[in-house]
Length: 190
Image 1: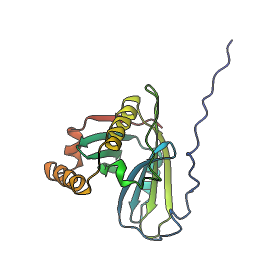
Image 2: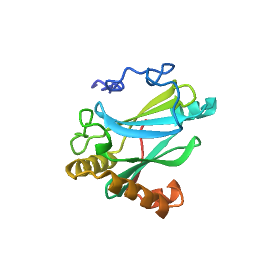
Image 3: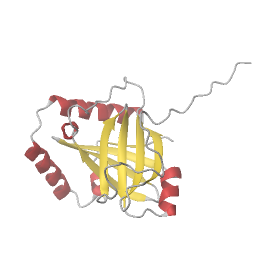
């Protein structure tokens, strides 16, 4: 009889922030919103919500997560939904918005999955209330890698990025409509 192979779950890559600690020692309040970038070998989605409820925290930990990608020139949008917690929402991004010294591009080989770290921060006090690590599908992994590499190769003109974001929001009445037009929608694992 052969042995069963047990896959160890990877830790959160190179990020020492923990639940119950400040998201940043420099700030104790944030505007409600979202931030998405790639750092420390993982996709990082940070949600800044005012006073997240216990049900939202439990849902973030346990409910299915779906992600999508919509690309519009210099602006791309990571779409995300947590069942029964948050409806389709989006985070506009371009790799050039990350300072050059901190900029990192995905390098997962074809056929591998990447990780998405979701962090929930209480915008009222800056404290991390929840974290979750999920695995992105292989197709989503390669799609994000391709979009970010294309952005990195292109010159960045901030007004053109801002116009692309404004055009996208003018075209779609909400993120549900953007998700219907997305290049890819996939369930995350974990």
